[in-house]
Length: 447
Ligand code: FDA
Ligand code: NAD
Image (cartoon, rainbow, N blue to C red; front, top):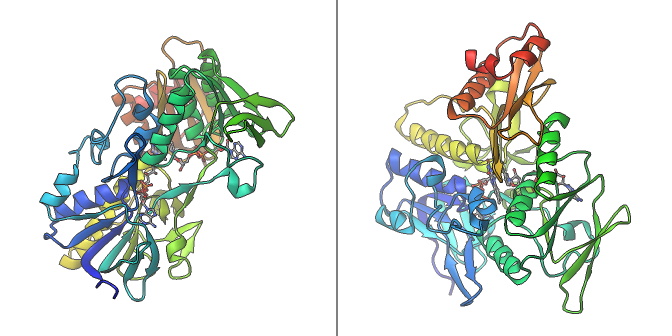
């Protein structure tokens, strides 16, 4: 006989960044013991003792940075949410003390929004009054495109802590070996650095003329490509992985590039983008731009169902359009906004619509950058983007319709980052682009 459904007033589906911040906000706004549950499939396999540990929400950015350090590596429970934004670290005990149920190692395979019911892979059912969908993204795999040999051993991806453990095990097994990193985006740049720091011989391969083309201009990429080359990372641009060779054990030995070149490899890390996990509600809810369409309170087209983090396509008030954002700052803030909106509806007290200023960042080796705003219009490079600079500090403005709409800065201080955020938010007018170029960072710090 099937077990009875468990009922919660609020269910968060997914146990990542958005879930952790939503739980904290629920607690701040007031939630009674037993009212809230987080249901997440995440689990951590300990490869030494072959045991699955359950994993409470954590700050995913740590996985491509501190988690891979050869010394003083970040490990759970050190990076549970909400430590990444300077808040309290919510350990599994925090949830149990507050009466928030963490239902982990539990994959939901069916969502019936009309019946307000979720079904897990093991056949358990959960019912709710309010649902927050926080399923995040999955990695795009080379097997999705049928790339020959993409299933060989040691061709790895990084999305969750289990992937992180597999990566660490492969790095240990292939110590000081050759690594090929496929993809020139966030994962490509951060993982190439991590592998180099771990003494791998690293080659990055990407199809575009320069790295991170979604955000970087040629002038910005000039610095990072030069900097990586000086660190000893080989850059192969304008081509992609068309196939792989393996030895008799099925372990990858080489990457065959589209242009005919062959790169030896003991490990391959692939970072060719993510895909929002919206499949469970496909056809049941309005979608837009590949995500679940929400209003400025993250409520979807189905009343009482909210979507937060990577999966939400929301109104970007500042630019008067609809966007989906795959970054941690938005995951945190969208979660907080949705919970405040849920509670505001209950109390009848209105709250303002989400008014998000895009904020992305990355760091690797000794360099770190932040970006605020929109990278549209004409770009204006400022400062010294020489990769050999001892203390690099440079950036770019984006100017559209005579106003600065976006700012990138490498090597800034806390005050300078605040200044560029202010500029991106207030969009000051630009009379002369050449003056802006010459004034550089001073333009922002004067505002
Ligand atoms: P997130 O992916 O965090 O959580 C989704 C959760 O849902 C997971 O726990 C998943 O297991 C669960 N789930 C999915 N389907 C399920 C199902 N059917 N049943 C049960 N559970 C299910 N951003 C940034 O701004 N700066 C940075 O430095 C980084 N660094 C970074 C490193 C790495 C390695 C990655 C993969 C990503 C980043 N990001 C980042 C991006 C950032 O981490 C990302 O945007 C947020 O984690 C999104 O938060 P969500 O809660 O939406 O998804
Ligand atoms: P991405 O979209 O940043 O980069 C994908 C890259 O893949 C492209 O730049 C391109 O160079 C490359 N590419 C596409 N097809 C290719 C092919 N066939 N062969 C070789 N290269 C190919 O995605 P990602 O780096 O995989 O990151 C995954 C997700 O994780 C994203 O949502 C990203 O925002 C997030 N993330 C963010 C950060 C951060 O914000 N600092 C860090 C890590 C991950």
